[in-house]
Image 1: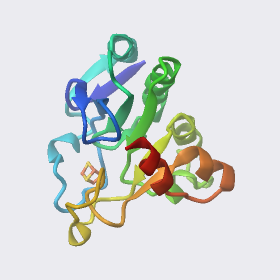
Image 2: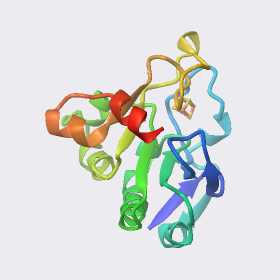
Image 3: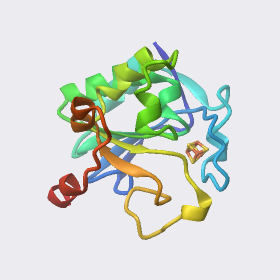
Length: 175
Ligand code: SF4
């Protein structure tokens, strides 16, 4: 399967979730948040294409990383190749975080034509940082978030309950 990426995988990130993390930068985003820090990731035809097998090979060679983080760009524009990558990461014992400009409620809207594909990825994500970046709500004191409307969501618990649950408790344990 092919995936379009904005940049090579970043290793040893400490700002995209707890612990050392490898970050996968998905190319393409239609949210157009004013003040976005990564406008070069918006064009869905920009960046470069890679085989998911090659990305997975890189993930298999990771050492000391606690997890992977899907960022971009909008990861949920390419849910199927990223699901393949997330599945491989989980098999390696890595946890999976994902940023998205969609809200949890939008991603789990069964009437959306993309619902089934997006769920394939969402079910493999441990923690979702959701929502657009809102410049008026920018807050540099927040960890892992750019603006205060964004939430850090425990996906498994939220899917089980059918409502978004944030992970303040999880964060206390992980830090
Ligand atoms: S969702 Fe992220 S990448 Fe997309 S426009 Fe908003 S801040 Fe930029």
